[in-house]
Length: 383
Image (cartoon, rainbow, N blue to C red):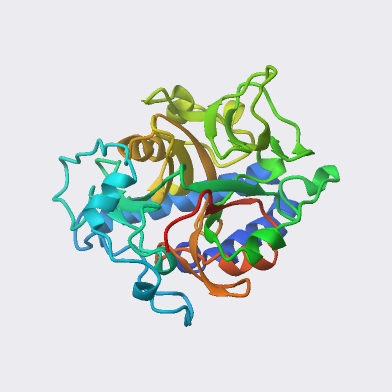
């Protein structure tokens, strides 16, 4: 009995503090050895136990920490003094210029943490004071004070979203490996702004992905779908056979059903199981999750946080002002959001937006096995 408890505690500690080890062990060893369903069941048991222990801890001695956002570059940056590149602009005016979706959020069960539910600019040294992105955090689960979800709202009128297929996922199993890195032309532009994780592997749902002329995984009718048009506009909807359109499409990514539709958390997010979520961890397991949503004014919102279900992820995106949303990748090692700072000549420093997430900047620039999204300037920004 003591040995079993010890193994369990070691497993929980590994999940919390070595997510890369857990992710790679599960994908490379457990799944081939015991199968997808058994691996998922084992992960679900460990995550459930972890959540119960967190509930006990935060109900007694632990306190939620609101210092979730990173400060400073992830590596030394030699970019010139930002003040020399652009005039100082009032932060309040720039938040207004970002045309933020209203934050529909109030959590009555907990004392408000500093900064909770308040938008602030994401400071990008190369575009100091410009209205490109804003961040805040919310707690969508009234029973879990530690389920802190970071929200990043991006000005889709000034930023252009792109999609990249990974060298292995999701399409290599079908004979369609992707490039796995940001195109050289966009790297050389010195105008990369940010990048974030994509969706699931092929074996976890066969969710569709198309970039340019290449179909990495065939699209499925009825799934939640993010469409990127070549003019920079975006759409999230329930996919149907496309009608003829005058708007050329740049990329399409599916990742399960819609979790937010017309401002309402969907039944699939609340109660959907394997029938709608493929072979992935089901919607009811508490784990790190990420997702994207669209606001009525066309802005894109990325959400990421721990101890979430699909439904509480959807609630966080709704609180941020999204009306339609899909889930992206899950689990601690696979969720990531980085900002780029150009150093000139196509080189960059990069930092994770959260101090608890893996920094995917190097992989996005040099090669990654999973798909991801990245953002460039859509129109000139005053410097």
